[in-house]
Each structure stands twice: as C-alpha cells, then as structure tokens.
Image (cartoon, rainbow, N blue to C red; front, top):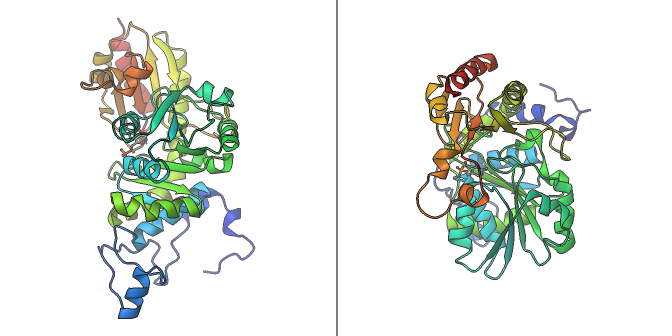
Length: 390
Ligand SMILES: Cc1ncc(COP(=O)(O)O)c(C=O)c1O
C-alpha cells in the first residue's frame, strides 16, 4: 500500500502510531519472534569486530535481541524518547536504572508513597551500599526550590502509589535542572497515553510494563526510556551485569499490548469516571483517590486504578468477599477488575513497609477497574457496599 508521503510519522496521533502495522520485508504485520539465546557470525572478522564494538550485530540475548528491540523502539516512540531498554520486570527496570546512575555517597530524594518494593529497594539495597535516601511530600518537591540541592537523583512517581497524588512535573524538573539532579519517574499509572514526562522536562521514565502496557495480566516486564546517552549507559553497565533482560516472547506480547493501549486506557478511564462520579456522593465514602485530569500540567487523563477511602461504617472484609466481578489480588492494569484492601498490605510482617511508614489509612480499598462493562461492575460494587455498611 502506498504510504501517504504528506504525513510524517510525528504528525500522527500516538494511537495511530502504536496501531500501525510492523514494517517487515515479509509483509508480516507483527514482528518476528526471535526465540534465540545467541546469534552466530559469518566469519572470524565480523565476530572479532562485534566483540570489539566496531561492528553492529546481535551477539547474545542478555545484551540485545531483535524482538526485544522492536518493543524498546515502540516504547521509546510512545514516550517521545530517543531510546529504550527493556527488563524482566518493573523492579529490574527501576533497580538497573538507579544503579547505573547512583553510587556510594550520592543522595537520592524520593517521593513519599512510592511503590512499596521500590521503597524496599532503596532501604534494603541502595542504603546499605552507602546511598543516602530521603523522602519528601509532593508539596515539598513542588514548593521547595532548594530541596534538590546536592542531590544526584530525584525519584518520582506521579501519581504516587495508593494515595495517587499527582505532581507538577515541569516545576519539579526545573528545580532539579537548576541543581544538576537527574529526574527519574515511574509512569506506569498514566502510561504515555495520559502523560509524557520527557516532554515535561523529566530525564528518565521507567515502567512496570506488567500493568497497562501488557494489559492482559500474562506478562511481568519493565522498560526504561530516555536519551540515547542515558540508555547507552544502562546498556553497557547494569543491563548486562545485573542481567535482568526481557525474554523475546514477553517482548512480542508487549508489542501486541501497545497496539491496543490507547483504546484500553480510554475504556479504563470511562469506567473510572463513572465510579468516581457515583462514589464521591456516597455517604460511607470519605474520599476517592484519583488525580483529576489537567489538575497538573501534562496529565490529560486518568487510568482505572483508584483508591476508595471508606469511613468506619464499612466492613471492608465483608465488602471484598461479597464482590462477584472483582478478584482479590495484587498488581493492576489488566483486563480484569481487582481489589486490594490496604488492611492486607498494612498487616504485612517483617520490617516497616512504606504504607506503614507514610501513613496509609486501613480503610482504603485499591481498585483496578478492568475492561468489563462499567454498569455491570458498578452494580456489583454498589450491591456489595450496601451489604457491608453497618
Ligand atoms: C507503581 C509501580 N511501579 C513498579 C512496580 C513493579 O513492577 P513489576 O511488578 O513489574 O516488577 C509496580 C508493581 O506493582 C508498581 O505498582
């Protein structure tokens, strides 16, 4: 088919770019799955030159693989980045990215209510390695221009976990630039459909691709996108040496996920809007935590992950056990609706977790609204709620 020469790819909307067929010489509209751990060489010279970095050829899948590269390229395009690198999980993306840029003696400023395992990574791995970590509220990041003085990395989530507080990213990015601090943000909640942090001045974006990017609850994966220089630094250091690479089949599934990301996010948003409209006026609901689109610069929509804070009249255990179309489980961002009561996370044994440290109420249910019919979901939720109010 003739390509419209008057339209460059950059002029197309993101939805069209992501849905556009793969450009393969065979005519295949999906990328080939290179399920191979290594790549062989035609002769001694090309092998030697590749090892010496003077020839570009695939060598070993821990370092690079064509199917994984197809996902990385698509993801970089989605976020408006120069380059991307994929990992075996969101945590591998977060840890490998931080360890590429932070060393002993550095200071990391992290937003409060950060994803609990990111918090554990800071406390259990980075801190014992001699990295100083401090935690700050969204308001402090925005309003204290000196907060990032002497800081190596500002680690952000916007919105953050459970309370889903959104941040004025251009403001924080400007503070960070003035002090030479690198900004890293977890953009798993909004996805590039609703927020493109690099365009707002942020340096590096990380994702748990296990959530909306996959969308089908069948993949655990992560990805980091940034400038060519930053991604190269990760590719040379922590990707090969920590070894958290993404498997080719998972990458293939993630390409498929990206095709439908826009349509899914719009569907999740419509269901979230319906729930928020009806819940905010409910007598037993103290608050619905979900950022209002456009309340901060660059956040144009809301995903289906929200937290409902009830008053003490609601029996949380009874509520979740009454639900028919919501599964009880961790994670989020899939086709299925899920609930996770904060009581479960707060009861976790062992060292103090981030929910306990930053003070999350025990009357919260985090809800991941899936792709089921919104009215079916509401009927189920409303019925269970009515049964559970004392
Ligand atoms: C906000 C956020 N970031 C990162 C992660 C970690 O991702 P993964 O489970 O893919 O390692 C999660 C997982 O729940 C998350 O909620």
